[in-house]
Image (cartoon, rainbow, N blue to C red; front, side, top):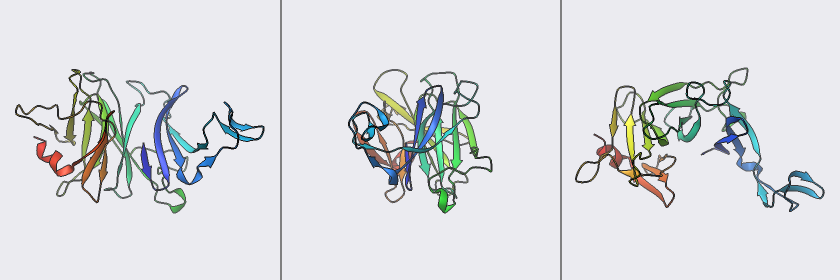
Length: 231
């Protein structure tokens, strides 16, 4: 998920389609009835026992339908890139580690209109087209981040990768349209330098740190440290 301005954008799979849902943080509501139902009930509003709800105010779905290997990608992880104008949302699909299917990465621009804060830029028909799209040979992606390094012509894409060996370690790659480099660490310069179950990546502009989380911890690493380990 990504928190941008007053919106929370979340990837989800529901029913027969994959979607990106948008929630308004200014519209958190308190329920008035404690029942297993969801919605309006005798006595007010219910949310299956929850006291507070945050209703979705919008969603985006691929026009091609359900995601497939040859069709629309399955959105799995998101990140915010404030280094573009306007700010943008980057996404990656998750593929199995060691898969021969090339993982897709793509970028959407946020709308710059004040009345559409936190929503994606769309055309007159309400369609949000990706402004960048790539395929990468890195598989098992669990986190993605786009960041323009000083002196670089185009943004670099950082991707966290799950391990296909089950040894408890993952990997981190930095890539662009020219090449790719993997983080190395330890006495044997191993590629296994990342948490095996690490999820989304987030960059803090003020601290210069890359944040991520695993099933055991929330952690941050200076981006400069990551860049020094890439070779």
